[in-house]
Image (cartoon, rainbow, N blue to C red; front, side, top):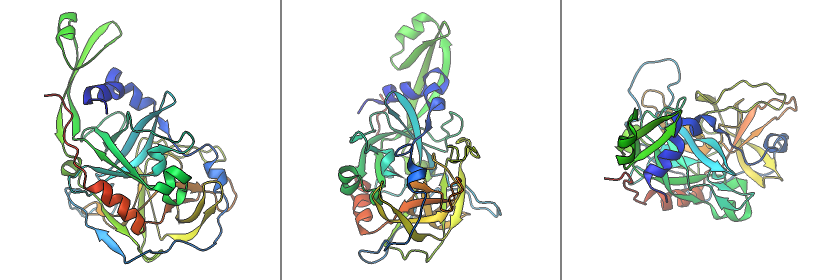
Length: 343
């Protein structure tokens, strides 16, 4: 894994040019068309007793707002693929060392190339127009289900990624050539000037934004979920309702109606929602507390569906979280990361 300066240098030099140029990511260009027809054929089922892992704060300030408070844990993951920069949605999730991110499997592993996308992968909670209010968290190791990265089975389209302590940027300024050459950290030339950026350790992800809980083997439809994400892509009819700049949400009870041969989807669940790609990997939160901004991750957005054939996305889908999901989570949640900021 490259050091913090190199990762930060790629994404944040030249006024965050690479971050701002990133576009939403999806498993392929035909995703919406492939999942356009929903039908009931069997469905997800628990493989053991229902279980939960409790969330941890700070989550957010308690309040009495009648609006939906966006969780502090929500953010974007950024990565490079074929020379271009992309993003997915994601969330901080509770772990032993408070260093874990939950997202879609296809935001970590590209099934087309059979390769991971973690070399320049970062998580930015609270991302907004190139700003990283709680720091930037560089990936250490990703954990996916064997059936996803070997058999391209989107019923297992989820991933958990351990991240190093956050990196915060203290100053960006133009300096003399002598100062530039003496600076051992991040630096670049732009518009005839010399620029340097100093970084510091921002601490652990979970200490800064909290971590959502996890719920698995839950009865489908027994409880409603809030789905959060950063949608950006156009609907199939060309309408662009979202910008990808601000997070959005949907609310509904999951159903069992999703099958798709192209993505090997047989047991995903769906909720009514108009969010478009860019929301990939965003959390589905069960028992979400609007005051605490915390709940239980019970799914992540995987694919998008036009269920009535009018060229408008009206449903989003997620893998069903069962005991095997918990096993992947547990393997990831007990790994230490530490800091990568140079002393």
